[in-house]
Length: 482
Image 1 (cartoon, rainbow, N blue to C red):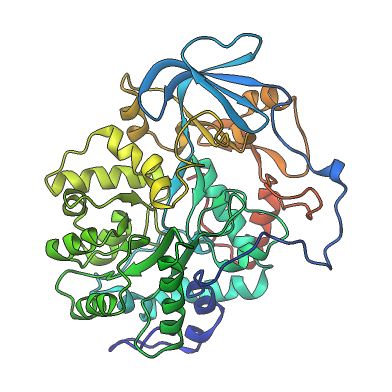
Image 2: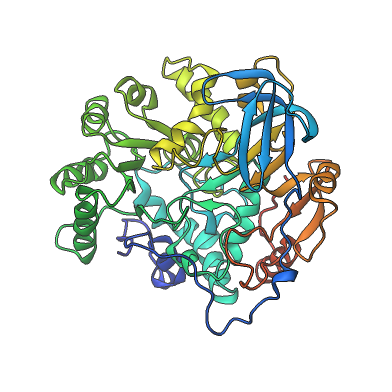
């Protein structure tokens, strides 16, 4: 589905190029597990470095449990799984004294990560709806043309790997929005992609634009709705009514959404900025959920979703940083914008509820509440440790920024950590994808080769390799540590 022409704009030939194919891709059909292409060389399993503790380890600090916040507790990790969450010291287990806040990895439920290689874009004006900026000349020059260049020159998933590092160093261990092409990769994502094949299943779909009546995409939507009705889909991510309230095109889109019977208990509305209070109550009554990206909305439209009204209607709400051209630099930054905007809308949301929007609540919206979003025995050890600077544990999370990130584990592997902790936890693991970094003045170590797949997959590129590829093709690539 191509972007329709907008009066006063020039779509240009590259509107039919790789940018649109990537942007519009979505996740429309069931995906299987990643497979190594037959042409890919086999990797020596001994060369696949797993930066994971070689023994059971306990992390000690303030702990966010599913039910409470402890000022002192222990999270025990054994062979990639959370073995225990307790307040008493575990016996016979090596303990890392973090002095920080130990919590689940953050879940970013809306983004376009392949486009997060750019620096932030300064919109020259406010737009009535998403179709206006997508059809503008300035967007063509600043985003579309460079992206077409990168997509043409670089191997698939090069940009995605860079964007995943950006997410990871901000404490995010799971994202939504990667293109379906990522699912055919020989290596699994660096961070979990919740709308792709994950935890041995694929029960999510994603659609960028609501289809017009009679289009091929309308048939695709009908198949998705059939699978939802049959219980085969837990989360269907759909961009809807992204524009200013009162915008006629958004109003028409909402009516088409209802006519297509797309309001279901699995439907996850992305943005929905143009919806009125009555409309938010209507979709809430239908069981829809919401993913909110206030920073991007405000920069593009001058207003954002009536999220306080959605919460009052009983609608589950999660946060997404959208994409870097108009969104936040991290999910932690997005939390601060959300908090301020909710206050403007008359809702002083408790810190614990804001934290839930990027952890347990987000996991429930994604249909992955049995795997992600909480520190609980038997769960995958997707763990984030933040520096502690506030007595209230939840408030500490709300005030954090990426420079506070001390440790990120995914499935028990140490993907990113203070360099001294990385050495201690992994036994000085070394390899081509493990490299030291200076992140906001702090010595950190990154393992960009983390994989949840087979060791037979080709080696993943290091951050240095990915950065060099990107900047050779487009020198203005946005920095990660800025």
